[in-house]
Length: 634
Image (cartoon, rainbow, N blue to C red; front, side, top):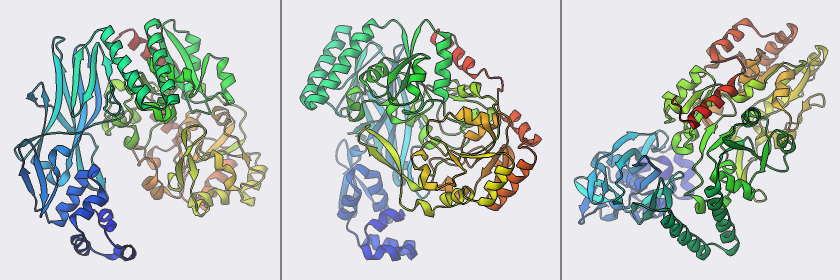
């Protein structure tokens, strides 16, 4: 019984008291709600959820009515919907070496999943396919209410044939063609716009109602499809939007025909570099590959823009040139997976669906992945060509957790920025905590056309704020630091940077601006105070001590963007864990008394954790890319 759905149907005055109702009382409430109100409240777009709730209401009693080529869900006297209304989700379609490969998932109510069988029909003939659980199910409080079974189908193509592909849900022996195709993020074709199409390996693909169609075409025929699509764009979009779309598409096709070199794009944040993207860009520019033109993409107003332009070619983020180069790119090397890097087209992205996921995205990461990031980093959400990692345990997690990347896509080379770490004049205690999703929200920045994070009300009541406000204003602590010759530096996560003044740190505390170089900070730091941030890995790489302040561990992993993963702080961490301010003071005072020297046990853990400590990470990634580009098998 999904309590949140049931509460929707209660009167407002009942909601507060509903927390003490047991399942029997909730079911009684639901029984008094009409089927039509349930359907209207949930919405037909969420048919599996409607079935789940009605199944509970009617205690598992339902009918499937054969209506000839389809069947109807019926609960009591209510005909809910036809089985054909259930959607087929298409995630990926590729054509390589004459093989069409379709990957997607099918969706059905979990309470009825044993009644269903799925098949694919090609030119009127039924075919089976490989099905598996890809972790796409929808659930509430641990209860799955919509089962989404992934499938993969491959078809050898004959250039003399046209292919008509449809999908079938067989329900209790009744064959029902799926009447709805939902094209997901990486599907090159959809039916959202008139005359949408995609050309792959000399074949044209398009969606026609509830069918996907494919046929072999010539270059001239492909040009005809493009002309028809541009005409449809001109008819549908506003004049200014149509002009932009058609201009970019025309420029793309013109330059594609003339293109002689591969195009590689490099990215960090839109308004700050100094991460793995810059580190690898700098290395590749020094190698000057004769087969590739390399560009770094960053906001023109960013202070790093001019510095990067002295290294190599720089393109202004979200500019027309960025939009065109993204379509032409063979590789994208990025430390971030933010929307702007993938989609500089804003709300016009659908007009480029067929073109803009063609590049091989190599995720350089912006820190060691120590936690369970499967919720947003899995292949269905990102479709990465490769993920760069730095440690055996990290690689093992990418392969064993449900990320759905094969071993050839996980490159255990080490992150590029590790090559640039160095030891400088120490004498600073660095406070670098990560952010907290629980008291942040995303809102559109209309000027930039991108989403940014903002603080919610109540931030100052959070344990996060209270801890750092207390420590960074503690007169005794600050005096001890000064007497021992240490500066105190506060630099939280980039998402928190716009709100750094909210912490009201004491005047003695140095709060650094957003554009401060992290590697310079790591060089100057004597000891790092953090919580769950991956900056601890960079700092420990330099064999310097770390303290983890984890006063809200359960709360953090319950509400943040990821779940706790393989990294065990007690057994694998590079420093002590402090759960209170008192524990923190005890640990850091001890370190200061001993010159902030790393303890042997943590140095050994660093050696055990990393695959390489040789500052050749960029070299290994570059070699991997060049071998791949030249067709050398891994």
